[in-house]
Amino acid sequence: MSTLLSAQGISKSFGGLKALNNCSLNVEKGAVNGLIGPNGSGKTTLFNVITGYVTPDSGTVSFEGADVTGARPDKVFSLGIGRTFQLTRIFARISVLENMLIATQHNESWIKGLIRSKSTKSEVDNAMSLLDFVGISRLAGLQAGALSYGQRKLLELAYVLVSDPDVILLDEPAGGVNLTLINNIAEKIRLLNQQGKTFLIVEHNMEFVMGVCDRVTVMHQGSDLTTGAPAVVRQDPRVLDAYLGGGDDDDDDDDDLREAVANV
Amino acid sequence: MKLLSKNLGWVVFFAALALFPLVVTNPFYTSIGVYALLFMASATSWNMFSGYSGYIALGSAVFFGVGAYTEALLALHWHVPANGNLFWLVPLGGIIATAFAVPIGWISLRVRRHTFVVITIAVFFIFQLSAINFSFTGGSSGLALPYITWSAADFNNPFYYAGLILVVFITLVSAFVRRSRFGLQLLAIRDDEDRAMGLGVQVTAIKITGFTMSAFAIGCAGAIYALFQGQIYPQFVFDPTFDVSVALMVFLGGIGTLAGPLLGALVLESAQQYLTATYSNNSLYLLLFGGLFLIVIMFMPQGVVPFVRDKLTKRTDLERAAVAANDVSSPSPVAPSTPTEVTA
Image (cartoon, rainbow over all chains, first blue to last red; front, side):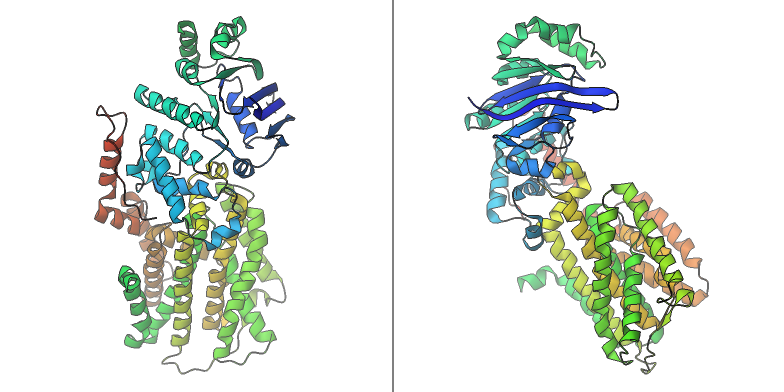
């Protein structure tokens, strides 16, 4: 397998806090890549650096061999890197279908948007089939703000798929949703992966990570600790140390993690 | 025919506006009509950017004033005869206002939301002070336009119809923007700008374009106002209450809607002109407006038009039911989805 997306030696400080410290990550093409680590270990910051929301102090991000460090988020997206957010972000006051259409311009210039209708027949058909794929096509005409939290998670996954990205970054896809939906989302990810989509997933739910990911990178205090198959990583004493004895226990979520790691 | 029947309400509305000065010939009322139309155009234009994108601009009087001064200065410098030819300068007022909007938008849209509001207010005062202090603007005594000698009985009508053409024009543009990809992107920016950026929306370019487009009709309205008044003063064309009025009209009618700004401006500006003229009290309308806004904000915070529309269609109830029926967290398994009719 070849590397599709890679971050090398990324460092980023916010004031005195070193969120990322010489962190490296390779995303293998065609794989479901997992990214785990205690709270505050820099996973989301790394996502933000890769997708252009945050400019790193040092290090490079490359996608399909081309340097994309510091590119704006819309540029990164048009190259084929889609992402979701930890706290689900949808456009609340437009319809579910319109949410889907936002992502369709992909490589289109903004000037063209002035003179074209907001959708074509094929764009609507594609959007509807993706909504159908995640199971919320019946809600297409509703205002997105009316959706339940789980439905928002599904919508966010669906509109990232609209532009057919090569790699999809998911920030806690299973966070805050019930078990039925977690299994549902895991199944969608496996299905998309079989169709050739590459994933990078941040997740705290260990069961989910073990079940879905082909390889896992563990982060600790802003750096990558180790990378390998889930079964191998899970036995790594350094990983257990990071979770159990680490200096990152700033959040009560850690208790859940400790339990989760211990139980797996 | 289908297009006509679908937009019957609009056709009736504009037909009524077109017939108004023919039925009501009293200059007192047609004069109120002129002011109402200028504000309807301005509010619709303001809504086209600030309403759709959520970037509340409180400096639109800049474009109104630039349009008014452009009309006055060009009429004087080009020695345009005092007749209907003066109306040909109105689009130029809009174009110059649009040209000013490019650098203003470029600077003020570098910041988000609340800071943007403050910057637009600051820019407004720069323009007001400039108009008072530069000599080519006539300073605080303003400028007198060529004196038009039409008969008093139907003096207002040309201004009324110029205003009406402007309202129809900007309403069509606003409707077009709402249906375009560009308009959808403005709505996305309103709801979550960072998320929109992450889905490929070129937010900076979109915002500046929208801001600039909204200046044109406001500039034209300023130019017609200058012609109608015959004399302009910096404190009246660069008027801070214009900034606030336009925003309040849109909020009252329903921000982000097409009919809302028209309704809000029609009601508020007509009421203001009527009350000011009838009771020769300049601030009585402020009391009434204050009360009205309290009522609207308490009972229909989205504005009148969305409130009535949602009540008529029972949207909230229908949405709640549909969401619950489709929710995977409900005990019943998800039914296979049926093909849905969607109008895009």
